[in-house]
Amino acid sequence: MSNEKAPVFSDGFAVPITGLLAFLFAIMAGMTVTPALSGSLTDIAIPVSFGLASLFCFRLRQQAIASQTEN
Image 1 (cartoon, rainbow, N blue to C red):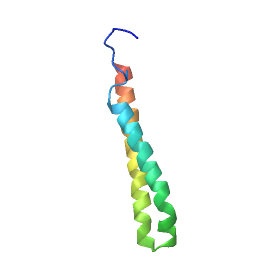
Image 2: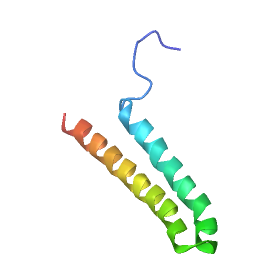
Image 3: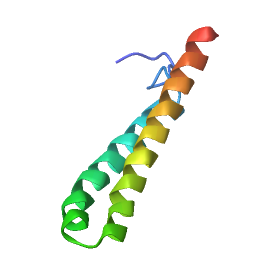
Image 4: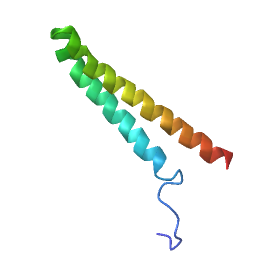
């Protein structure tokens, strides 16, 4: 154990949170794709929107990492 007051995550809070959100949305997209494929065509919008949200969170994570490496 160290007595130094260092942050647990050196990346700040944005990188771990957006990474977890991207993972969560990817899991939810995978879980909803089978019922959507067996249902009507309008049901496919749910897994597609979860997939897009996952990609958006992943992109935010990449931008947060890039902005921290510039400083």
